[in-house]
Length: 303
Image (cartoon, rainbow, N blue to C red; front, side):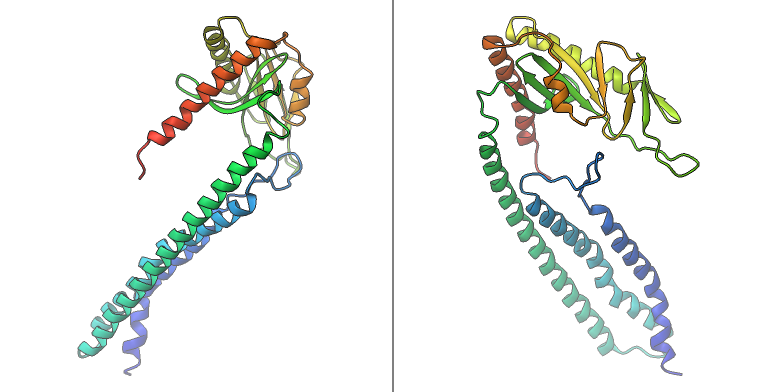
């Protein structure tokens, strides 16, 4: 039965097929869309449409780069199987396998070039849209406005998530994400109790988030005093989005909140008057400090 010589070599393609299935399944992990822990609605930022297109372009690049070698090797692997089962070798057939591999390799190279060019265009478009969005934000948050927010402020050996400067003090906001477990009835457990030195979640407890928030608060207080030449009121806040926070046993030096209505909470928590020269000095010092992170990223070699 001559047809078995062509059917049996397909066995050698099963490992490649299994690898291809795994690659396609892993593609779903590239979805970068995130949803709000408060209402489960998708979170949108400036340039969100371009961000979504960029995510799809990276997913396409992942598939082409991962599936390309698998598809290119398939004719060679099948040909090796034919060598084992064929009664005689046909060099014309081997030439056909080699030509097919070459064509497939060229095709996937063209696909990778297309993905690369599309990602470059999308990144440029996103950069332009973000730049325009930042300029438009000045309509509602001008530089002279008494409220100013900084993100990813570098400390000595770590990064502070957010720092908010207000007319009544400076607030350090650290954010921690924790998965909410289910009870025996399948209901989410959302209650977290705050003690002085630890957080008691359903089934486990943690000390590190409180310790890190206090550390960031102390560091910023000392750093601002040195940079501004005077004491600046600083308050630490630990945000646990999506959790119901019980602060009946919490210490008074730190605020632990669920994250919802955080802006209203900051506005309603006066520390001490921070206006005039001290307010401007704090903003200028934090702006210089935040710029260090951008400079560090620019100096890192591209890979």
